[in-house]
Length: 294
Image (cartoon, rainbow, N blue to C red):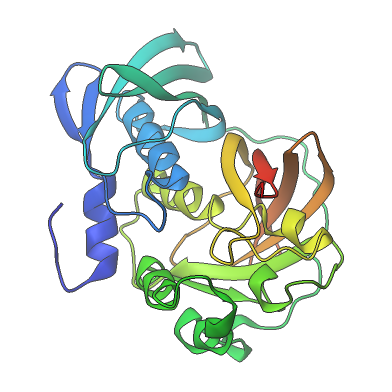
């Protein structure tokens, strides 16, 4: 991957896929916090691939995806797009991500021309202004003694340099052993301005949406997460609905909760609001959440 002193430029490069031939794209990978490709990266790249085959007047309004195998961060990923349907108002694409000859991820995405219609939304919940909250670089060192690996703090900070992500309350690793309400809020935006391409903002939000959604599952059980070593987990599926226009380089409130955990799986659901209270995105994800054996 092209290394630059600007983490946001690095992330934008990661999302700028190479077109191999019609409907086939190749994406690079980056080192992750764990020895597999970050799920948000694969989902965002797959949506980029789908969007590259859709007319510019059609915006993404939903995606549904499954994580099939762990991705290898040392190898490129090939994305093949199937043009399922091109209708008068809606366009449907299916994307399969392949590494080492095997599918690792599957996504279906739908795009729609702009249309006026009925309007209502769930109100935005209360949350303190993001400017009043600590950055990752300010917050993470406070919990250095909670992590099984002392190098985790630096790696977490580095992984979030492209995106300014601020927790409203203590993250799961901040209150290990203390069961809390299964709800978490974070504010996020990119650390720098983005181009006006709506697809870019949707893909950037897709990337970020996989970072913290299962936190609420951990909170309900007083677990700190993989970095603490008291949970083994991975995303299983991920769905998003894009309701209204937004910019990923402006503050977005990610209001997350977990209605259920059972069978070694946890469910997270969330709403993402713009700073002025518009409901922009709904997100639902189920993941493996297991207590380590032994």
